[in-house]
Image (cartoon, rainbow, N blue to C red; front, side, top):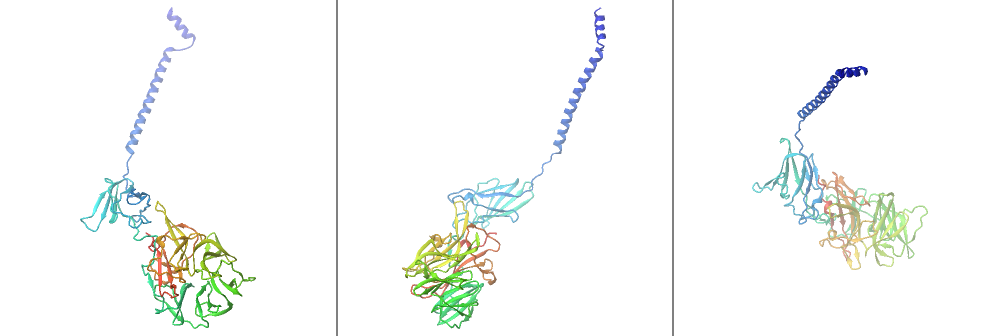
Length: 517
């Protein structure tokens, strides 16, 4: 009865209970089989991936970083000195040399590599018994003697590829910021080998140095491309006037000189002189193609020029203006205003016959007294040059500067030196490194010019040119055609007016050696 009822009940719902249970069991089996298949497939894939992975052994022999370890007993901030790593040429060096006297006989280097198997440092001291080798990977804190020839051998991780580097710590052999006059070629005689020189004036004109000398009452013009090559060309001059050599001035187009009576003469070649028909009390300088001077108009000193622009009328000078005896007048062009050159001069004698140390500037239209002053003097040397500063991290900055040397002060000829880095608006006494040496006698009214010479062939005439005047500070740079800017001082007078028969050539230390390649 019980079975009948249940059978009837299932029959009523039109179900088949036995068949349904078998289907559910099959589905569960299929599900677990799929999971197992996926799991096994994953294991199989991972196994295949592991078998395909291969490690490539590095062939790199690159030095990625080099510096010196800090050592204040040797030099402050030694670890900040920058080193160049020339991977192609195999060289490691510091382009900015360390100060003169720095002890580099026991320094520790911090060197970084890619994955390498070996790094050996060899110190060649010129004696096999003294030579030394350091296994850098094993002993990175061992000191290195950089006074010897140091080489670094790097072997790649593969144990086969290797590369050699020369490692050098450069140290200045001279004080780089000192002004040197005694080597090489420190002093020579003026051209002509005269026993006594009565007067001289040298000037740079049309690519040549022109030196006018009066000796034995005769005036001779000497010209050369290179004052130190001893190849002066002499040309005796037959002049129709008695020249005032100290008045000689040059523009790009012509030379100008006064006769002793104040008459102005002009020449385009230095040998043939003609009168301009104009007279001056003194000549103070040039601006572009214009000659600037002072005239005495019945006891009133006035600014004048030659040739006079249309509408120009001479006008009185200021009571503080130097009517004679000022330094050479030098023109510069600001990089911010190339169309407006300006000229400056320093010192001289005012109309009341007192000395002045003021700086005066001219912009093509007006004269203005600048703020910068030096000790009152006449006949000082003014020229454009370079000065340098080095900060505590050994970064050197180069400045376009103005330098004033010597002149005759109230107490007599002086060897004082002043420097301005702002076009004469302020002057500072030069540091001891720029002081004139005792073996160069103080002088006034010398001629001065700065001429660039190619480092590798400084005696070659074709490689000389007048140094351009720059006015903006900039970082020190070097180039493959590096020029040495030499300062030349010609002649000059002592306190009695005697002319020194000599030429001095000098340069700041760091400008006298070439860039490190």
